[in-house]
Image (cartoon, rainbow, N blue to C red; front, side):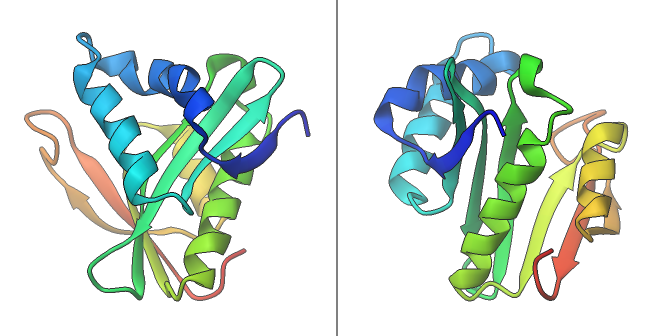
Length: 151
């Protein structure tokens, strides 16, 4: 393993923000997400750090029903994709959610994101429903669910 999975730390901000703002031209909304996630989810906002900084990150949280958790974000730096980084981050987040009493984990994913779908299926996530226009016109998502013990 080239990286260490650990909780987000303030010096990680620039690297995490760079991954998060990829689709946020102005950058403000993504900066807010990173800063607020660090404050709200300190135990389940995890970074995979390597010598170059954050190689990837995951943000997960329990919902208002403490037995249900969500994976809110999972992103990996381009040069670290397909090397196990996303899986390591996701497994660590699932472990922390389960330790906090979460019994079911949910997430949404773009239907055409084959690498992510393969990752999630390999960890036992199953499709619950397709959500048309979830993030606006043409932004469909699949709602996936993992119930039972973490892999």
